[in-house]
Every structure is written in C-alpha cells, then in structure tokens.
Image 1 (tube, rainbow, N blue to C red):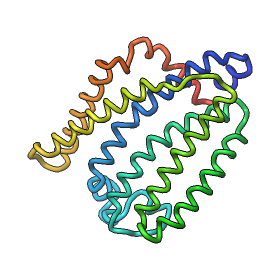
Image 2 (image 1 turned 180 degrees about the horizontal axis):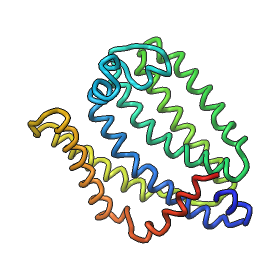
Image 3 (image 1 turned 45 degrees about the vertical axis):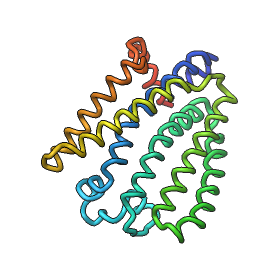
Length: 228
C-alpha cells in the first residue's frame, strides 16, 4: 500500500497514515514495555526459565551471563519502544523504494553501538550492552525520521507522545501500587495488576483525547501501510 500511494503521488494520505502509526504504535507497546520494567525478575524466571534468572534477553545476543540481568531488561524495555518507531520508518522507506536509506541508518547506528560496547561492556557487563543498544535504537529513530522527512512532509505528533508519556506514568504508578498492596499468588498478582493497570491506561487515553473514535476508521490504512 505504501508503494501504491507513493506511485500515485498521494503523499498526503501517506503523511496521515504515518502520524497515526507514530501515535498508536508506541501507545500499544508502552504497557508491555512498562510491564517488563516492573516485573523483570518475573519475566526472566517464569517465562524464560530459571536459567535466565540472572540474565536477560540481551544474554542471547551478546553471549554473556551477568547477575544484573533484571536491570538490563528494564533498560531494554525502553529500547523496545524506540525500536517500534524505527520499524515504522523502516517499513515506509522500503515501501517507497529507497531501502538503501535504511542501510544509511543501520550502519552509523551499528558503529555507534559497537563503540559504546567497547567502553561499557567491560565495566558494566550486560547492563552496559543493554544501555548501548537502547541508545542505538534512539539514534536509529532520529536518523530514520530525518530520512523519511526527505521524501514525505509530515509533522511529528509531539502532543500525542506527551499524552502517551502521561498515560504511561499513570499505568506505571497504578501497577506499582497494586504490586505493593495486593496479597495474592504471584501469577494472579501479576495478572490482575497488569489487567487493571491496562484498563486505567486505556481510560486515561480516552479521557486525554488520545484515543479517538474517528481514528478507528483509519485502522485499515494503518495495516496496509505496513505492507510493502
């Protein structure tokens, strides 16, 4: 669909779709990322097995085992949000026929990540690796937005992102409160905390005007924009 709109010169509709993707992609991912941030030990031990209790998702990539895995996973959770925005830009650049621009983003980001790893991994281990990876994702988002803007004129949804941050803060406070005061089986406690916080998150988004009814009619466009 991106290729079709681009070929027809329908940049206005592309820009509209991009703004919606920039809005709803992080909105959907934030609760999951914050859940990883609050429950890194639970995720590592009970979802990936006890052998990962002292590691993190980055363990597989870098091949190291450190006791600071939960902290590394918390840092990576921020990178997950950034990677979502990059994937949107990457799909668009590929769809309009300039995949080389993705390469121009990945190469400096890879070099940046490699240099940071040289300094951070020896001293901080997997936490340093997670930190450099997250910073690299941020760099990839910035560079890819610059690339996309060269082909499609659009404005970034700063007000929507601020609302997402606000909703995320409300989600985080809610889940921390429930995690502290609920006295239940661990699995039930985590499940109820996440579900209740998710409901509060959605209600907050509606009250702040982040989630709008008219946006629902655009979801077919969002889906098609991700197809090359």
